[in-house]
Length: 215
Image (cartoon, rainbow, N blue to C red; front, side, top):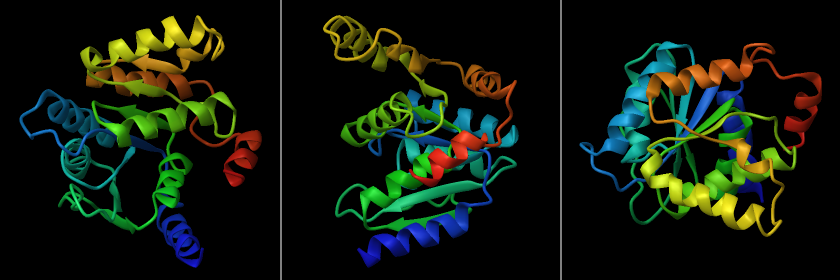
């Protein structure tokens, strides 16, 4: 319990002034010449130059690409590293590097400081983060924010299944799939995030501030 508390305190202290930020997810296993790696790097460079801090899991693959793109941009590159026996080792492109032993605390930080989620191809961990965000937004346990899937050939089957099975069998509401956007062009990802906040700004509304305090 005290270990989890200490992770919350340290992360909150170091990230509380990092706004606005975008959380990026994707596989640790992709090579640096893969389409997903290139998309992540280009997208995060554009996000960083547009004024967004970039938060990734701090490891290799898509996470490295995200941090690398942001690292060479104008805004902070942040890694929320998790201690694992396999796959996870910290990449070198982190302006702020935090280490977690507990997935729970780490997952809260991804949501707490993000104004958008960008999700690239990945495995169980990536899917876990995607559906966590969808549930929190759907149930209004966090503020409404863009949840963007990149590299549509990877995602189209899942999105179709959500519409064809979950909506058809009334497991979710008919409008719930609209929480997801599929965008393949990095510039369009940046534009979509700005469009979401165009009329309201990036600051938390009073109702959202209360929700985020109770996250």
